Image 1 (tube, one colour):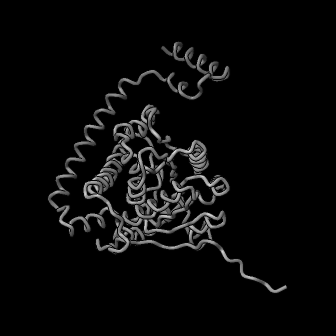
Image 2 (cartoon, rainbow, N blue to C red):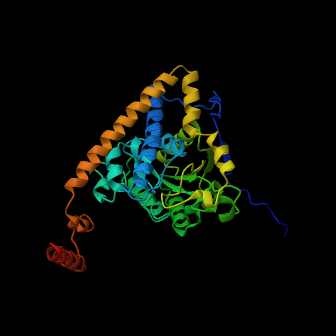
Image 3 (tube, rainbow, N blue to C red):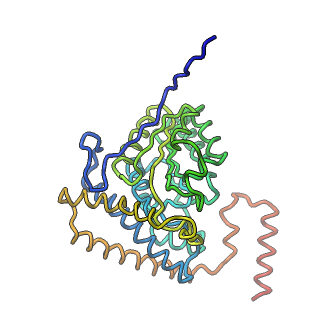
Amino acid sequence: MPRKKVRLEHSVEYLSILDKNGKVDEKLIPKIDKDVLLQIHRTMLLSRHLDDRMLLLQRQGRIGTFAPAKGQEASQVGAMAALEMGDWFVPAFRETAAMLWRGIEPANLLLYNAGYNEGAEIPEDSHDLPIAIPVASQIPHAVGLAYAAGYRESDEIAITFFGDGATSEGDFHEALNFASVLKAPVIFLCQNNQWAISMPRGRQSESRTLAQKGLGYAIPSLQVDGNDVFAVYAAVQEAAERARAGDGPTMIECITYRMSVHTTADDPSKYRDEDEVKKWQELDPILRLQKYLKAKKQLSDKKIEALEKELEQQIDTAWEDTHKRIQELTDPLVMFDDVYAEPPASLQAQRQAYEQHLKCEG
């Protein structure tokens, strides 16, 4: 029998709409209301300023280790802006910008990064999940939420964020397999920031794209310019429409760059070239959007300067509120709360033992 070529249903396309000079492809640009676009810009800029402030606070020993989102704001805010508030948001540990778009207060993020889990408390009516530190562990959760939404015949979908390193984890592959088989309405958004801590993208996978990993599970997959907020918005909008129509999951690979440290326990100068960083700084997602908005007379240098002062004041107030809450949070026994609806005997015994220890110390 002769060999025959197997025809695959899908292939990987690359989408870019906004170039580094702020010019767009008018045929591809999605329709976004002016006020929404300005809010997208504000949220991206707030995330950048909050990152800078938290880095300073961490170096002063006032908060703990955290993962900056600097450079990845378009991949996060562009994605979340294309969804509904009723959709499920399942983050990893670098989604500061996405969380701000969803209404998480800067004070809560500061409190969480200061070591107080109260900052990660999720309101009961929210469809946001808390930060997930173990790599790729959150991806199956998103599939479960999406499957449940479909089972209930609701219009909700789920989106989950993860990095390039997560695509090498078993949880990622198991999640994609289940999502494909179950036609779960979920969007897998990979922020390929080129580095999994100190492991470069080229050394962890020989795949020409990470998006094509979705093709192995018969999932439509797309690669986009992750520093182009319009391309991310358009890709997620299209994926959301597919999901709501019952056509299942989509895999999106955002090509972006981690401009800062992996976490504040990391020194990227030990493993990456400064020339590489400078090259990606020219593709800064915030500067690209600002060039577009200024060309459209929707923004000016004067307005940007005023906005930056406003955001700095907002962060000042947030840190003051955080500091006050830290002074009030004096009972360490709360660490045993909100883990189980009915705590098992082993946890109750630990709580009692620790309570006795505190009394002895007092």
